[in-house]
Length: 314
Image (cartoon, rainbow, N blue to C red; front, side):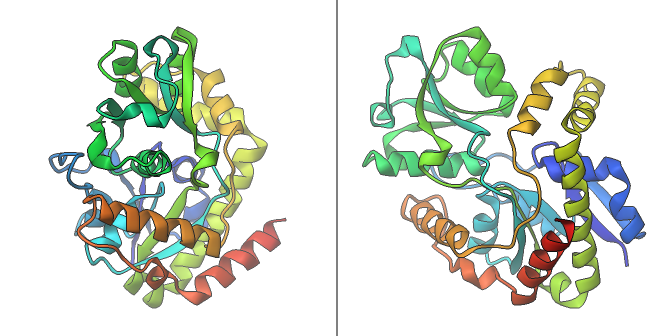
C-alpha cells in the first residue's frame, strides 16, 4: 500500500525530507504529494470562516495520508468532523515570525489595531497568533479588517501602505526589516508556542502503524541532519524558489533554518491546552462552526513511539 505524504516549503521538515531519500529507505512505497500542485478552493472571507483545504485533502482521493502544518489546520479539521490523529510536534518556533507594523504608522500595540487592516495567511498559524493577540488586548476578530495575503505579498502590501499591520515570517520578514523600520506589536512567544505539527487520519494510524512509525523515524533522522547542516538544507529551498522564478537568498534561508527547532516531540499537555484555547476562541469569533475537544485527536501509542525514537536519536 502506497503512503502519500504531503509536503510544501512552509513545513521545513517535510520539504527537506522529500529531497533526502530517507523515508524511501524505510518505506519503499511512498508517494510525495506537492501541496502547491493540488487544486485550491476559492479562499473564504477571513472575516467569517477558516479554509479547510488541509483537512479536505487528507480525506480526498488524490490527496495525502500524512501532512505537516502549523498550529491552526488540525483545529479546522476537527471542527469539520474529520477524524484525525496528532503524530507529533516540534519545539516552539517563537522566533519564526511576529505581528508588526511600520514605525511610521504610529501603531505601537495590538490595542491600536481596532478598525485596521491586518495581513495574515488565513487558516495558518497566523490566524491564531492574531486572534490570541487581539484577545490579550480585549479586542475581537470583528474589531479588525483581516486581509488574506501570501507570505511574500503581505510584506509588499505592508510596505506599500495597503496593510496597517502584518504577521510576518522569516525569511520574508527579513526583507521587510531591511527596507524599513518596524515596530513589533506582538511577538510570538508572548501568546503561544507555535510549533510545527504533523497529523494523519485515524484509520491510517490504527491500520498501518508501521507506516506511521516509519514516517516519524524518517523525520527524526532528517531533522537531525538539518540541524547539523542548515546551509545545505537551505539550498533545497533556494533551488525550489529559483526554479519557480522567485528570488531567494541562501544566507537568509540559512539564518531562518538556524532559528527554528528541529526534531519531533510527543504531543504535550501544554500544547493541547493551547490548541483547546485556540479552538474555543476561533469558535467564539465565528471562525469555526463550533468548538472541539482536541484531546479526541490523541492516540496513546503514538506519543510512546515518538518518545522512544527521540531518545534513540539522542
